[in-house]
Amino acid sequence: AQSVTQLGSHVSVSEGALVLLRCNYSSSVPPYLFWYVQYPNQGLQLLLKYTSAATLVKGINGFEAEFKKSETSFHLTKPSAHMSDAAEYFCAVSRTGGGNKLTFGTGTQLKVEL
Amino acid sequence: DAGITQSPRHKVTETGTPVTLRCHQTENHRYMYWYRQDPGHGLRLIHYSYGVKDTDKGEVSDGYSVSRSKTEDFLLTLESATSSQTSVYFCASRQDSTDTQYFGPGTRLTVL
Image (cartoon, rainbow over all chains, first blue to last red; front, side):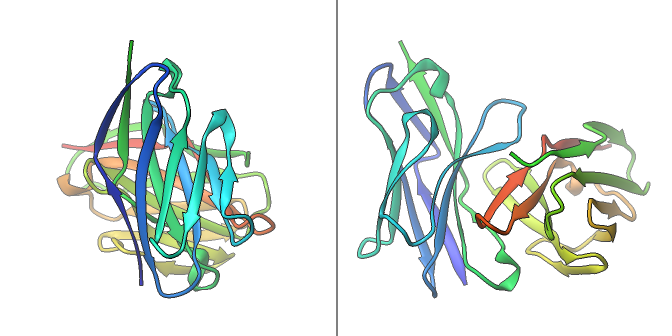
C-alpha cells in the first residue's frame, strides 16, 4: 500500500519569500514521486517528478524538491514566491506495476500576499 | 503535454439519470485513468485501463463503470447518478517512456 500526507492544507507566504510545501509518503517499494499544480478551474500540470535518479529534482517555474529516503519526505521548495504561484499543489506517489496508479495527497492551497 | 480532451466540460443532471463522460487522447498511450476531485480528499482513482477492453477498479469504483473500445477513448458511466457523485472528474493518460500521467481539463458534474 502507498499513501501521501501533505502537512498544511493552506500555506500563506509573502511575495519574495521562501515557499516550502511538505509531503511525506509511505510505500512498500521504492516510489516514484510527483508534484502537480492546479490553477483555478484548470486541470493538473506536472511540476516535477522523482524516479530514482538524482535526489534533488528541479522542475518548472523555479520549483525543486528533494527526495529524502530516511525521512520519507519529498518537500517542494521555491526560493522566492511570485504572485503567479498562487494555486493548489498536490503531491503524489506511484510505483511500477499494479497499474502504475497514482495516490494523491489532499492538496495544499498556496496563497501569495503582497 | 499529452493531448487530452474531456467532454462535456460541465453537466447538470438529475438523480437517477445515466451520465457518460468521455476522455479522448491523441498520444496512443496504453494506460488511461479516471479520477474524481472533492474538497479535502485530493484526487481519488475511480477506474483505470491498461489497454483496449482491459480495465480495473480503483479506490472509489462503486456506482461507476468504464469502457475502452479504442486506444484513444475512455468512457466513464454513472448508471444512475446520485448527489454524492457531484464532483469534478479528471481523466489522465500515462506516457510509458517517462512514467508520467498527463491530465485533461476536467468535467464539472452536478447531480441535483
